[in-house]
Each structure stands twice: as C-alpha cells, then as structure tokens.
Image 1 (cartoon, protein in one colour):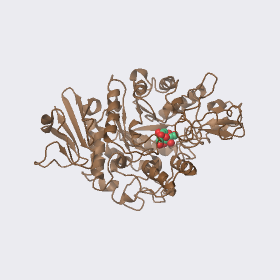
Image 2 (tube, rainbow, N blue to C red):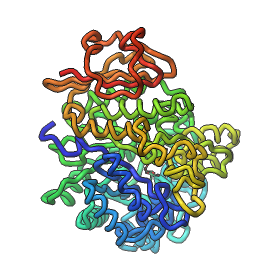
Image 3 (cartoon, protein in one colour):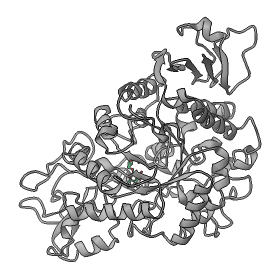
Length: 573
Ligand SMILES: O=C(CO)[C@@H](O)[C@H](O)[C@H](O)CO[C@H]1O[C@H](CO)[C@@H](O)[C@H](O)[C@H]1O
C-alpha cells in the first residue's frame, strides 16, 4: 500500500439511532440522545462514528427506506440538532460518517411518487419498471418480469395496477431500486453527497453499494436467476458487482471527492463480494472506495438453505475466512474488521460465549482478536459493554421486517412456527437492535418512555454505568485495544501471519514490521488450551505481555497455556 492513510489507525463506532439513547421520552433513540453520550464515545477513544440512517423515512426498514435524503426524520431530531452533534463530535476529534442508501429509495420519496404517476413521467426511468412476463397477466403469480426473490421474502417485483407495469425492489416493496443506468439519477445522488460534505460530514458508509449495477441485457430485459432452493430464482449473480459497478464508483469518487480538501472515509457494504473484487474496489490507484464490508465470516453458520438454515460455527472456518482476507488484501486494498452490526446477531453470543462464567472474558477476547488484525475495526454500539442476544419469545417480540416477512412466508408454506422462531431467535437482526444498556434502571437509562423494542433483562448486570470506572470491565478492555491501534504502528500497518490454522480452540497470529513483532494468542473455547506448537515458542514465552484479559498462568502451568477465552498479546522488539 502507498502512503499510510489516517483510517488505517482509526477505529469506527457504529450508532443505530433508534436504539442508542432517547432524549424526548418517546421510546425511540434520537440525535439528542447521541449528543448526550458523546463523552462515552470520547472516553472509549474511537475516531469515527458511523451513523445509521436518520433521514425522513416511513421506517418500513427502520430508516433504510429514505423519503428525503437532505433532511432529518423528526423522530430523530432536526438538521439543527444534527449540526450540534457534528460540532460536538468534531470538538472531541471524532469524525462523522453518514449512511448512504442509494441502491433504493422509499416508495414515499418524491422521485418515486413522480415516477409511478405515468409511464411518460420524466422520472419514470429513475427506477426499474418492466411489463409482465410475455403472455401473462400482471399481478398473477409468475407474471413477474424475472423470478428474483426479494431479500425480505416474496418476489423482488411489485405490480403497479395504475400504470400496468412492475417495479423492482430487492428489499421491501416500499424500497424500489434506483436505476443507476440513468445519468440523472447518478448526478442527483452525487449532488446530495456533496451537500452533506459541505455540511461538514467526513464520509459515507454505502449501503449494498455493489448492487447498484444490474446485468441488463442489450434488449433491456433482465435475466432470470437459477432456482436452487426456496420459491424464487437467485438474482444475486445478476446484480452483485454488476457490469458497470467500477465505472459508477470511480465516477462517484471523481464527482464527489476529487479536489475536495479534508480527510474522508468511504466504506462500501458489499454482500457477496470476493477478494479479487475487493482488491479492485479498494486499490487506491483506482480511487473507488477506501474499504469494503465483506460478508464471508458472517455467513459461516448459514447452511445451503440460507440465512435461516443455522449451522454450528467452527473456529477453523472463521480463521480460514479472515485469514484469506488478510492475505488477499495484504499488498493492495484494505479490510474492514467487524464481528457484528445492526444486521447481525451480537458478537459475544455468536462468536464468543454469553454463558455467565465466560461472557466478560470472551467479549474481551473477541475485541483483542479482531482489533489486532490488519484493517479498520468497527465497534457496534453495546459491543463495548459485552451486550448479548435477546431472549426472544414469540413472533410478537420481533420488529424487523426481514424477520416478520420470513416468519409469515415460512409458516405460510407449512414450516413449524417453533422451528422458524428458533432461527429468528439466533440469527434475527433484532438481536442487535435492543436498546443500549446505559444503567440498571427500568429501561436501562435508554428512555423515560416505553422503548420501541424491549430492553434486554440482563441490563441489570450488563450496563455502561457499571463498567465506565471499572478497569476490569469489557469497556475498559475495548479502550485498551483501541489505544493500542493509536500507539503501535505495527497494529495499524504491520504484516499479518496466521499461526495454528487447524487448531480448533486457539486463534493465533503474528503482526510484524521491521524491529517489532506482536504475537496474539487467544483461546476461543470453553476449555483450557496450550499454544506451545507456535514457532519460536521459547522466545515468545519470555517476551513482554502488552495486553491480556486474564491473570498470568500459575507457575505450575505451561507458560503458553490459556484459560477458556483467555487472550494475550506479546511484543518482541
Ligand atoms: O441483513 C442481512 C442479512 O440478514 C443482510 O443481508 C442485509 O440485508 C444486507 O447486508 C444489506 O443490508 C443493508 O441494506 C438493507 C436494505 O437497505 C438494510 O435492511 C440493512 O439494514 C442494511 O445494512
């Protein structure tokens, strides 16, 4: 990689506004709530906040369905409060990255309202409209222009009776896809992005940005997908990393960032992206995006049946996947590092252990392992407190459109509701969306009202106020690993070498640069383990311990023995 970039030694904190902190007692988090907690972020030591959507939205998909890109949803506040928050973060040296959701808009966005008025409307071609399948009647099952399924169950096409055509929506039917083939659409998006940069924001997290280029055929048609399982064809190969995607991202970078002063960060959320494609996206010489969110390690516990076909997670698979991406982007490109976000189950419940005897140490272990990899780490709100998945009961406990639609479709096709609920309880996105646990009071200090989704009952034990001044807390450990990236250049840019790849308990690797080497040893299991098979074990045994989450081993024990979920970082100069 060329010149070291500021974001190589930065740590990003993701805020999901609905669930962070509520300042007006309506039970929904808001910008005022974030403003009141900026010192929590400063104390943690993060460098950037990624703010999930706060724009006007009917909230069909919790804000990822935007009806106005250049304003703030009243439930979350106003542009005035937004400016106060931006100023408060900048005063503390923290940058703010907005969520850019431009693969689709809300169907209540003025653009779509216009487009659906008539086939001749100048905005019609801003979206994907197609007639029913040859010889079929619109609205009839199977008449959809392609057999693609939506990510939120059902077809990816919605029949519009008034104009006699279908429109495409890869997500909910209230999220029609924008047609990026149309230059007017692209220019409107670039103007909107410049508007936010002029307001002082520091970059964008780009929602499903590798889906904006569809494989449209010369005759304007879109091909069917292969039907392997389920009710619909798999359209993903026909809109993931599509034919013009690199052209669009290079154009966006030129039109929005080129020649603009400032230190910005852009990260593309890219389901299904490969290492080869990620290198093309993040190669600085190509000026597309700085880094991508890849999904390989968050699909390892998903069987051939997809997301809800939950399978056991094996450490060797996790290491193989993350190791591949470390090696793949070692020379060119850059990784984003994350265990969880607003779409994934809580890290400690999925990759660690949320059993009472292991939760705290495994939360710290996960932090050490992830933050010592080469890439930019992302902390999801509450992860720094060791928050866990929620003990969901029936479908009534869920709020997320993806889970609700899946439950309706699966049980509607005869699946046992209890089986469907079992998968939702483990993999459902609502696990990440329960309110942040600030203290042990009734609603965990999140709101004085009734929370839009229930607070995890374990907030009486797991909360910020119990941890903020406790040097042994998960919070304090996150502060230390974040500080390490700021103080140790080898953590930011050192080479990565995986060790013990086949060991099913220990995650071990070395970070090195001329003059310094770090060894990370982590026992990611509920049983003790000994890491004496590592190269130069004797030298490492005598090395300085830079960071640990457990008391040193008893003299009687092998020096490289590790308690369950114990993680150590050694340094050799
Ligand atoms: O949640 C997922 C799987 O359960 C992901 O596949 C998710 O659908 C995908 O990562 C895209 O997510 C993004 O776009 C969606 C549509 O905008 C929105 O619902 C997600 O919250 C957002 O992160």
